[in-house]
Image (tube, rainbow, N blue to C red; front, side, top):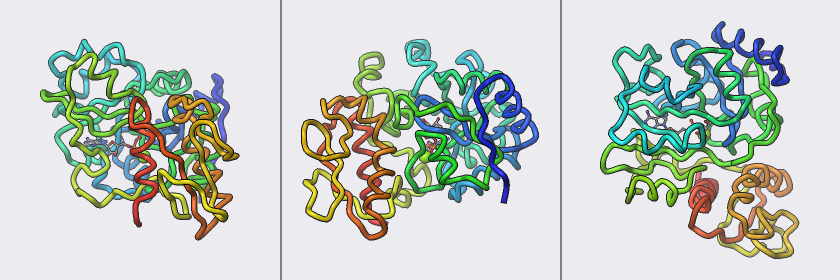
Length: 312
Ligand code: TXA
Ligand code: MG
């Protein structure tokens, strides 16, 4: 068992985090979406430890985080029309791009696939860490595989404390759902709805296919259950007397994703409220969640809720 230290994101904390990463250690870091579990993407041992710490099936590949969009060409081939996407970076958009043979990344990062997922996070602490480390960071969400994603340093400590070297504490994540994953190769395909709304991407790229699923790149169907609380989850539901309600829009529920029906606020609250509801419901309890519209960030919210409710 490791002693996981909680680091302040000041100069001393950032250089300690970079030192740990250089030595092959694992450091969880805040991003604008959720906390990521960072490890050197060039180091096989560090990447293997990420899979081990999360208990993640090794066929499920990892996103590579870079400090600047200008660095992408070192690791992947840029798609035609790449410049049109520049306005989304840095930010919650991940692109699936053909991996360069000379990228120097551990093959474990892509789980042997020919494309690599790359993202330039916008969070100032993530950017400062990437600059201090000066290299590519593999970074899945910093939760045990299949469980609720972390949007606060305390969530990371609860799930991975004792398994990783450190957590950089950057406070709560502003976006609250993971990045949107897009394969931009014509015709472009959405692989995971996320922090950038599909409508915003379509305004720039034109129609985008929605048949893909990043949660099952090579093993269809196996990872539908995800973001799972311990209890049962009912969707589009009114809570019964013994159930814990999570509301959306005006209503009596004590837990409410957004009383004003704001999808951005609801996304930011989603994972923390699922955790609170899960603690209240306990083992064998039920969480009933009000309907959320399937537009804008609602697509990402409903995707995560469907997986939380999926049979295990
Ligand atoms: O917002 C985010 O994207 C967060 C923060 C930390 O950046 N990261 C994140 O990573 O959500 P993770 O590992 O929890 O989810 C990444 C998803 C997985 O479903 C994985 O299968 C898919 O991206 N993915 C990663 N690399 C891929 C690849 N080369 N081909 C296909 N799918 C890939
Ligand atoms: Mg995840």
